[in-house]
Length: 296
Length: 311
Image (cartoon, each protein chain N blue to C red):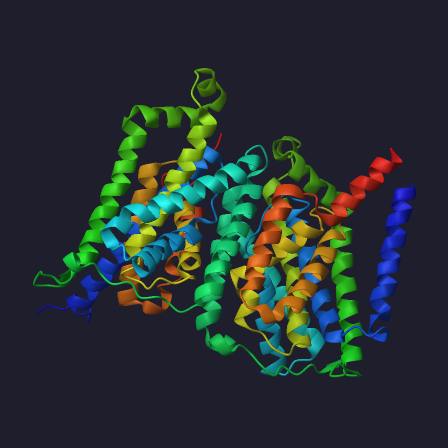
């Protein structure tokens, strides 16, 4: 067996895989943030809390209704998406005309409430969620062991991310969306129901976060704090990538996940801060982000 | 004119109230906590209320100053007042660094950048040897002010904190009511216009942010002396959110509003301290209510009503 800088390949590839998995979650979450920001002009601080909710809904389904992983993968995002639609309809839509910061503050408050409710009920310890039966075991690739479930998470996240990108860039609905981002009033003048589109966009982006939560449930435990741990990193990723480009946020999310994984192998002390260091460097060299456009 | 006179009277009444509280049976430790957080919120409001920059990372200055001061006083054995000044200075330098990076973007990105940088500081505090990780720095001696006044007496400590609060409040008040402060308000109202008048907006933002961070540090450093400890709670992002809430609730862009908001939030937390996660839920709910219905804050609303009555 070969070794790389004194690190056994098993450990290196294991961390890389974990990095890719985290990167997939980052990509799903920052994609959602980018879509919401583009359409609604709101930075959704509650995105992390909703990711956590997705995991909890899957756990509830299993615990109380005996509904397993595969149906939960569809049902949980639907439940969470519906919750998001209610939030948008009752609260968020009153803030679109105001300064961005009110949207951030409102969703921050919502994140606190959601997290507080779950922490009240389940404390800070995690609830285990089993890996689905069809995904037990893994392949031995020679240089590393690839558990089926982890491979599946990376694969399905990529499919969903690029699917979203395709819908936004290549379909008629996507064209309406992009047009509404450029000039809402004109699109409304063409008889398209933009407020409804905004509500559904928020619901969809939030459902993506819930989907990521279900995917994460068997890997990490279902924990009320799982959202707040991830959301600040996702914010840094959004600053690095820029919110302007959907593809940019996918690529940045995955890239940062991998870099985190590598740091964990070679210099574990810095693994939790490396994202923020990269953000600082990007701000110095390319203040608008890797994929962002300078604001006019 | 009557409005100005009324404001001065209200301020004077508040000052008298602060000076006599130890004699009307209010718990001095709680009052000192209120004053520290009030100063924190007043300093924070300099950037949110007067420049229009939402910083989600002010806990870094508050908490780091607490760590600096606790370390300087406990391990290096410096006098209390020097420790506090050095802690505030350290927070100011940190604030300068934050601002240099964060002012490269504006609007919503500014908030996210400050939050991310503060999270980096948090992880640093979790790992650095001098902060003692989860334990924090405990048993910091209060010492003697100028070598004479024994601060281990709560009453002496209280008036020391009142003095620090007055100093910090004065710094912020003078900054807001100066030509420099006028430029800051102009940046808040119309940044492009200020640029066109030939001002270097970025420099003004960095200067305001640095002052705000230093005074925030003054509050954090004083808190570490009062409670004789510095812990991770003070650098956690939740603290950054809390100071935003205090400012929003009291009234951003008013000089006294944040202090009022701080007093309410601290009193509420003290009252709810036995209810665990309910604090988070209630804090979040107040946030939501403030943003949806009450964006001027308490003092902002009062000012508006008074102005309406004047016609």
